[in-house]
Length: 200
Figure 1: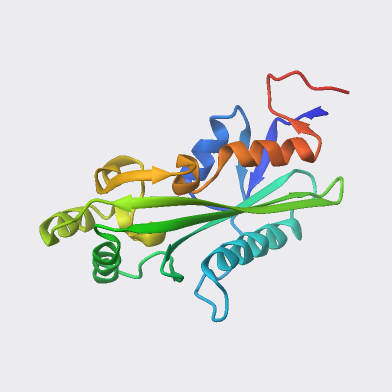
Figure 2: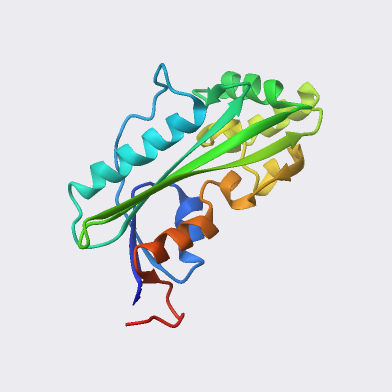
């Protein structure tokens, strides 16, 4: 097993970059620049995996020296995918739809190891329940601008945490990157995190 010190992140998400950096990795951001718009005929977890795979493949075509990680998060309400809202009105509508009920958060990730010619992909799902929300509370959260770059119009970290009554599953999946699964994926590709005992 080799010790991994650098990883390419096929995303401009500051949350994913910070999560990877928390593992002791130097993160090289290479945006995939793919269109993440909704596509017909895909269930929410399939859509998340489709996007993650497309991001990884787009960056793998340009970056051959490092392990590449791509991820995508989709919020699932009754089988309907909620991605990032287009504007504040759509963000408020999404939050109103989520208020007082459960939904699913699917985060798919894809790992590509160009030197070894190997790939790994997985989708992880967490169940989330929101508190009932009044329109004033929704409007106040939307006014912060925080929901506009997040699937389902909320982030579980920061101010969005006040909306969440409980979760059943992995917290980091809701943040946008299931760290525990990613680490095990790296291990299956033969990589250990920095500072761990790497086996030659």
